[in-house]
Image (cartoon, rainbow over all chains, first blue to last red; front, side):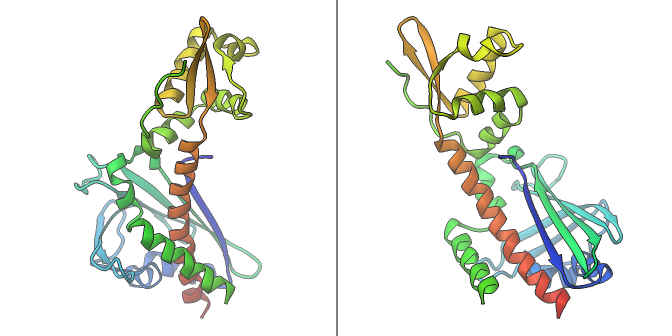
Length: 145
Length: 110
């Protein structure tokens, strides 16, 4: 039991293509379902709005930390009302890429949940409990189809 | 006689309480469901009773252990509820990433 989420997936695509899908803000928005106002730039804030069905309009703010093509991309997600990273609690999201024989292994690590105040934890999930149950059902249908 | 159950402090305090090797090992010992005294819990460690007491109180504030007065000494026992709540919190975040990763896979492999 730790305070972090770790996800790893094998992608049947070259590492450069995965890097593009992660770091190009338009491509990122397509799979993450968020409309971002501008590109990811190290040390700068990126804003936008979720496009996930049922959660349209939920604000997105991230602060890009590292972009080390094509192996490491990371950003902080502030979770307070105030999205200033110097004052707001946040989680750190890291995308680590490794080339494999058939494509790319992508590992996502999200950490720092212990810093989030309790009244913000649902916002940290960017949705309500019912929404996440629906989303869990979506992935089940997707992977088992 | 047992103390009143502490209010659910939510996963933040639980994660913070778990983020320490001594507290994790105390919790591991107690997770078999047996209650133990401070003397028992500090017997096979290099820690002083005071140190063990301090760590037990952090765990108690997070709702992870409860203290029960047995005669003249306090016995400590494991409470599983906060772990269940913290796990379901991480499961929900995790489900979000599973869903996003499935879409990323579809995008890069098409």
